[in-house]
Figure (tube, rainbow, N blue to C red):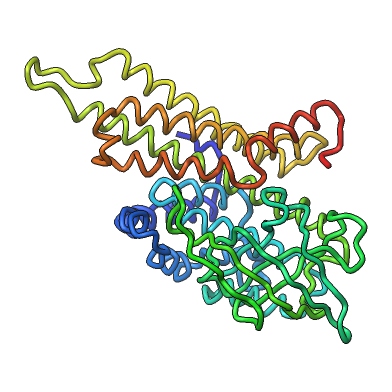
Length: 388
């Protein structure tokens, strides 16, 4: 069967290797990661040891030089086993792409080499308590001070907050007239003034350590800038958003795909002793499974088409990027809801891992840009309005 994301050559090899890590490492630890809300350290170590931290880092920096097809395929496999592992990997890759796109960042090459070697985990620190899910509009500011900059910020959701080695953050430029006059910069997680303020305790993706982080008079040198001063949207919208959209769409698709497989297994392997029939003999349950499968493959196919658009860009490419994420997030919510209904009490009582998929799928709905934002963005794009 042709993979909907169409990875080939080395990309297909990485997807196959990710499937093995997912089955051998991520899945056996997924239940404990979820129950205890602990970081999926075993999975991240396996990914680091096998070169996945540098999957999309340029080869000249020591990375694997892979593109979005490999990225999407890897995330799809990881998410099917452990959503928290997939989330950490997505945010790491998005931040690494921002670092790779930097021109003034003095530590760029060394950081990329550390990432490629599996010795550096990075992540995004965009969302703030003052702007909530509108991550493109930070309320924090960079202020000039003795030839460098200082910022104070309350970052509300930082995946891998207590485990990352660095954050790719955003604040308004000094004297900004609008939150869109922002600047993206690099901060070491152990820098003076950086503090993880509380522990994550979420409904789903419970092991991704998406905790709030406070910057208190954190110093930002000119050599720490990833974007030009006030040119943050070029990195946020031109680099991070496409990678984030593809990654989170693939993550949602992986959750849906596993929900289909586990529902099919339950319907096939469970029955009624009094008449010898199976759950699969009930047409209502078969219909739900069919609906789940169709929604999943529709979403995966749309992401595959979006990857084609990204490789051969046109004016419609940004629309497909937004639509593929919107469709995947909605599909994951619907598919896992149907899975819970099809599997009944066995799912509700947590005898099956479907309930974890159900909760993990709902995280994407509120993750900026939210589904409501995406619907508005898509509507704006279709009617010729600017996104902001």
